[in-house]
Image (cartoon, rainbow, N blue to C red; front, side):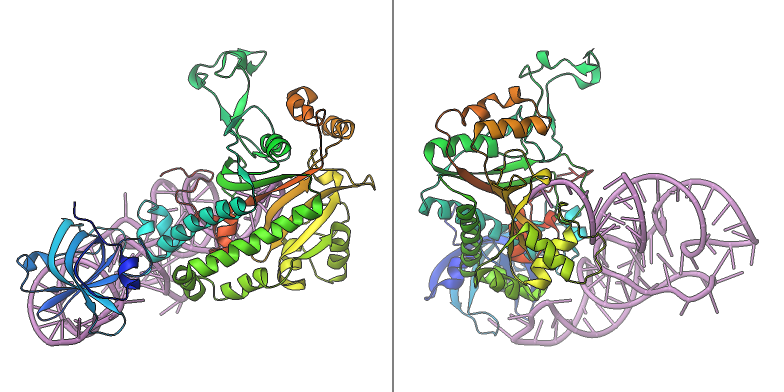
Length: 461
RNA sequence: UCCCCAGUAGCUCAGUCGGCAGAGCAGAUGGCUGUUAACCAUCGGGUCCGCGGUUCAAGUCCGUGCUGGGGAGCCA
């Protein structure tokens, strides 16, 4: 096959060239008297390239029948455009129709609604907006690895299938090879002894417990992979399958943890602002007019750091008529978090030192005996984007916390072992990758930043 | 799972007080034009989400189910 040139390279080039081959999909075509304008997109960038197809082409009659969505291969000269609106265009010497799309192609030249596009999730990356989302998604993944690489973190692949219940992180999906249509029960329960792993197992809800073991050996580590929650959540920021970034640092306290979370969010925002300019501009213009203001508020100044007790005070003094009353000791509601980050401070807020009763067993008990060294990073429009803590490294305290939470110490024997052999203070957090993408693009539904989202009742693609 | 809202042409949506089913875009045909959400004219296009009820008459009112969306909880 002929070597093709990507459209982003052509549009960014400084010199014309005699022979150029472009392959892609037709976004629109317009006829002029003696030639046809064909706009082609190959996904390499937001912009299309305009092709001039003259009526002297052998197959000009066929060219005039090219429909939106068709795949074509163009050979031609790259020249400065005679028209306004683009710098370069291609004067075709050959237009090969790779595949002619019939006129029931679901995507039209006009703008479609997000809900409709969700029903054609297999085709929506061919639109401007979704193409941009998934290019940014890819760049963001790269930026995360690069960020950690530069800071000396190691990338750990934690298991997807697990027998552990990472307490407090939600319902889990079962993994089994037992015949569900012919299940023999033992004492009213499935006979997991004869299941694949000889143990009840499920999809992971967090790689944290596993990755802690590697922090306590390789030092600074992270996982970045899919995570599964079987909660029947029906909101614009929950899905059953999502990606999470979980750094974990040895010899690191809560303050260092907050430092990393803040540095990371600021670095990633800056990276995308600098490296995805065209795509970001689309979102700032058409999706969320306040996007750049929001991102500025993330990037330009330090985050607010606020103990839970002070957050409660601020909320109480706000004189706001919240739907849910402010009660010390109770978890903050969505509306409370949004008030803090969107109205009171108008920038990201880190709330820390939560009451131990509302947080997970592995979070380190503070000296007051009442709070744990937990922290949540709240950002405008999304709410919680990071949840993390300093981990309880003292064996007796950890064992006590496991017991009072009603969990079985036996299942956590290896986790507890790490506190018996060379236990050290360490910290980490979970960053919602898809939520970060929402923050960066202003897209308000998490289903629209995931290629094929999984939600209750929805697994068509 | 709970609360609220919506479902009408391929898409986006209008449809008044219950009285003949509509527009723009898309598609087809013709015209015009270095055009760029191209433009102009003509034409085709409907299970008004399903089921049941009220009524002389239901897209419209009532009940119910399904699907989608917004909010809440769970959290990333």
